[in-house]
Each structure stands twice: as structure tokens, then as C-alpha cells.
Length: 210
Image (cartoon, rainbow, N blue to C red; front, side):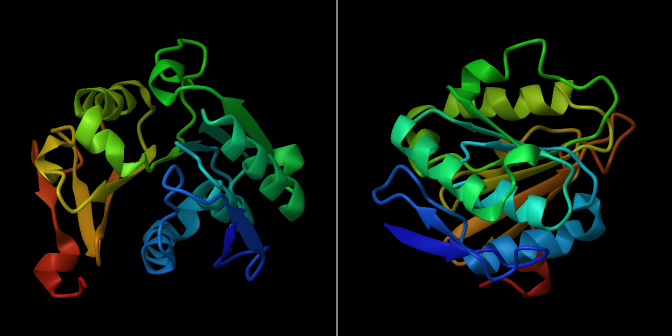
């Protein structure tokens, strides 16, 4: 079983366990650090959802950097055990909730959506889902954009083969590449956060990718 480190905040330098195999694909350090640099103070005091949580690296990083609390959704029971151990190891038990279940089903519940409290949501599914269940992934993205309050922030991890144009239109998506990983970040605004359907590859345009 491998491990990765928390990059910033209260638990900077602490390591968490990553279960072996292909079911868990934690975001590489460079991409994870870049995301949190983009988010900056937007993490502090904000509730977090870590969907397809795996080891919990993204949600735990957010808690380390001052997020209010985090909900981790993961379906694999063996991975959930490791996730719970990571939460305990970092001392975040009182600020973390683990939901063992299918993300696609969980987001269809009506009782999970906040009325007016902006969230920070991480969506980093196994890449196999982009190949095998892409319509459900697109439906998930759309549901998040439709149901989350204004000023919520959604961070999606894409593989290199997935067309970023599939991300929900009507919002400004900042898409940046880091090796084989692409992160798409959007601050939701029903009043328009950019041109309709705009998908911006900022890092590639500025020559900062790779």
C-alpha cells in the first residue's frame, strides 16, 4: 500500500495511505497543489464534497487548509476502510462524514443539497468511468451545476482523452493540463460566469502546461 502527502495547511507533510490497484487514482501532487493554489482562501470555512473519494486526498487536503467539514462519498468497502483510517490518522473525525455508496445515486437524493450555502465539490472519478459510463458522468456534472448554490466551486479531474466541451455549458470552466491530468475548475453563477459554453484552457494558452 502506497502513500501520498498532504501538501499544505495544518497537516502539511503528513502522509495518508492509498490502497493498491486501479480503483484509486489520487491526483498527482503537482496537479493537486495547482488546484489549491487556484482556490486559495476560497477553501477556508467552506463545506466540501469529495465525490469518488478514494483515499480522501482532496477532501483531507481541503480540511487541512481550513475547510469547515467534508463529506466523502466512496462505494468500495475496502477503500472506505482506508479512507476512514486516513481521517482518523489526521484527526479529522469530527469534521468528516463518510458515505459508502454510489455517487451517481447519492446525488439524486433531494435531502443532500444546501439551500444557500456554497460548497466546494471535487469530482475525480476513476478514468474507466469516462470510457464505460460517460453519459452518467455528464449527467452528474449537469446535476451539480443545476442544484448547487451560486458561488459553489466545482473541480473536475479529466483524463487527456475526455473532451472538455462535454462540461456543462453556460459556465466558465478553467481547464489546465498537468502531464496526463487535466483539472477543470468552475465557480458557479446563474447570472453567468463567462460566455455561454466557454471552456478556457488557460494553462495551455499561457504556455504553462506540461
